[in-house]
Every structure is written in structure tokens, then in C-alpha cells.
Image 1 (cartoon, one colour):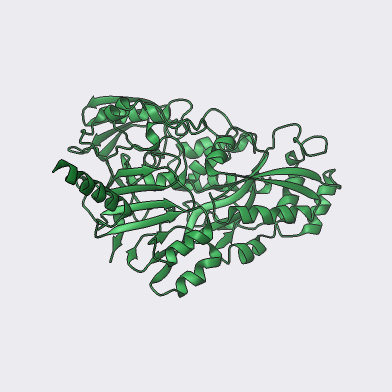
Image 2 (image 1 turned 135 degrees about the vertical axis):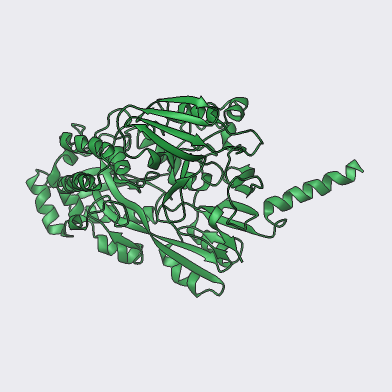
Length: 523
């Protein structure tokens, strides 16, 4: 009898993984795989948008991007520098372990220690104190207005489980050494991991013991990375998958014209731009003396050489919005008075290069991610051609997202594409502290050797401290205007979300691009 049962059990397991054993299996594809199941290993929006279904924070963003309680049921401010959180009782991790204050303290040290990608997010915290099993006090280094916003992107892990598998520190993605967190996960979220084959498939199933009220009707989620755009669209149209994020702009009409298919659109909080080395005295491989990128006239010339409307028309097929600053119009504290871009004018750009002493141009190494942003490779290729017309010879290097996200903050690139949405905080302070502030400790981690202005740095710190919206708006607008006028970044556009799916999928498409599957239903 045992010999007969074994193949039946195996067949049942394979059926569950393939999605045939459940009434409502959502088959989901994207152009890249997540690097691991470790929510503290990288501040990668795509990975976190999937992992938010497995792990949870003390608070979370809801379907309308409003903060609400999650693992903390309430909180109170004891003083300007001390907050008390009351934890939700009777919450279990997926393996049955109880969630307590010890897990919060463990997760703070795991994610917040020096070297962790989340150290900057948790930098305002000086100490976490356990009051009892379900009460935790956070003592801050200074008054800080955005603690709840930050906590929405910091996920809580099970201390006992992480200790058992030998993963008490974040997985080091730069070493490619693997590790337990490549294929294991134990959160408290609405879905739990049942199968993980890196670069092949990740399978989640509904958590029957989730603490919250169930709004979805999904039994299972099967995620398959399909790197090729055409193949991914073909999988949707053939019915192999039910849902793809960021359908290529050139395929949107075809998807919408196919019976049983639809495209759901929404503006993204992310803006795309080029950052650059403005600190080094020389620019390696440039063929000229000095560092041309330190000159504001050169940076302005590069901006004026880029035909952003041409990119919107030909590459993005209308699914983008040119921007002059790093805040998308849907971001809190956006200032429409600052949205005047430098005009597209190659001849004026040439004149600016000549004024800066580079009439003969120079050579520039351009590093771009492949698959991190919508049509990133095509945009970078187009910009190479545009810069060539003003005398700048750009040499393009494309990188996998994991390689790019490791090498960029290490300062290995001199001119690079980057996109930032202010996640998970959804506030300008996140954008500024990570990508505008002069690199210093945990601040400016995504601005290596980049834009630096002492007055702007001070304003950024004050923005994090100030809670009055009128005062915050004035400081935020000053940072945006100063950086725009000094061409701290070469701004491109705001992405628009274009998610392709079958008619049977009912999905929310939030501006932060997170796939909150606990709101999804299938007909």
C-alpha cells in the first residue's frame, strides 16, 4: 500500500505546483525573478512587491495607499523621540510559531545593522525596547515625522526560524553564494511559500490561518519569470499565464484586441533619470582631462540632447510623462510650478559643451539595468544615439538587476540609469535621503559620487524632522528647484503602469506597483 501511495502523493504535489489542483490559481509572469525570499536582502521594489504577500510589517499600505495597522494593532507617541507599539495578539508565522515582541527586536537588528540595505530606512531608530511580549518601545535619535511610513516597508521575520536555518543576517546577494533564504520563507502574511525554484518558478498558497479578514479568493499563485518580452506576451495571449505586469507598450493594442484580455493602466510613482559621478576629479575613459560631469553646462547639454518626446512617442508608445524633477505628480508634495524641462535643442547643447571647454566632445560609459524599468534597454540605446549627435560618444553596458543594484551603490558607475518611487515611504524624504543627499553614512546610498549641495543636505534633514505640511512643502520645493536648476540628475519621465491580464482577473493597480494579492479575485 505504501508503494501505491507514493506516486499518488507525488502526483498530487506536482499538480499543486502546476496550478491544476486549485479552483483559483493565479498564474503570474514578470521579466525577472526575485533574487531571494529574504525581505531584508535588497531594497528592490519588485522583490518587495511579491514578498509583501508572505511577510508583513507593523503597518502597511492599503489598496488606496493609505497607512493602516498590520502586525501592530495600535501605537502612541510618548514623546518627540519615543513611540510605543501594541502588537497584534494570536498571530502565527506560517510554521505555527507565535509572533511576539522578540521577533520585532530581532527583525530590527537584522535589517538595521550596518551593511544591511535597510540600515538607512531604520537609521532614525536608536534603540528598541521590549516592554512585554506584545508591547515594544522605539527610542529615536531625533524627532522624526515619517516613522510609520518607513515601517510599512520593513518586514518582520521569525527569530526562531531564522536562527534554525542559520540566517540571522540578510542574504549577501553580491557573493552569489546562495543560502537558505534563496528557497525558504516563514512570514505571517496572507500567502505562504510552498515551492521555490530560482529562475524557474515560485509558488505561494493562501494562508488558512491569516489573522486578517480575507478579501481575496485566490487559492494559489504561481509566479514564473519570463525574461523575453515577446515570449511573456505570447504566454498571456495563449492562456499559459493570467497576468503580466508592465506589458510592453508596443503590445498593448494587441493585448486589448484579443478576446478575453484587458490592459489596466495607472500612473506610477516612479520617475526615471540618469545619475552621474560629479565628484571625481577625472572621468575614466573619457579621453579628456578632468571630469566633464562636474560642469553644470555639460550636464545641461546632456539633458538638452535627449528627445524625451521622441522617447515617449516611439519607445513608450505614449505611456510615459516627461518630468523635470524627481517627484511624480501623484507623489505627496509634488510642485507643478517646477515642471518646466530644459528644451530639446541639440545645437544649443553643442554650444554649451563648447562653452564648458569640450567642443570636441568626450567619451562616456553608460551603465543601465536590463529589465528593472519599462523599456530600459531601448531607452538607453536611444540616448546613446542622441548624445552622439552632440559629440559625446557613449559606450553602453547592460547589467542584470541584481548586478546593477549591487554595483551602483558601490560607486562603480560614472553615468547610469536609475528609477526611484520613494518606496516604501511614499514621501519625498525617501527620494531625497537616498538619491540626493551627499553620501554620508546611511544617507545618499543611491547617490554615489553624485550631486552634492550642503544647503540641500541640511534641508533634507529638516524635511525628515518637520511634520507641518506647509513648512515641509516650502523645503521640498526648494530642494526640487535647486537640484533642477543645477541639473543634479538628467530627468527623463514618469512611468505609466500597463498590466495585461485575462478578463477573469480582478486586480488593483496601485501607484507603487506592489502586487497586493490579498485584494485580488478571480471570476
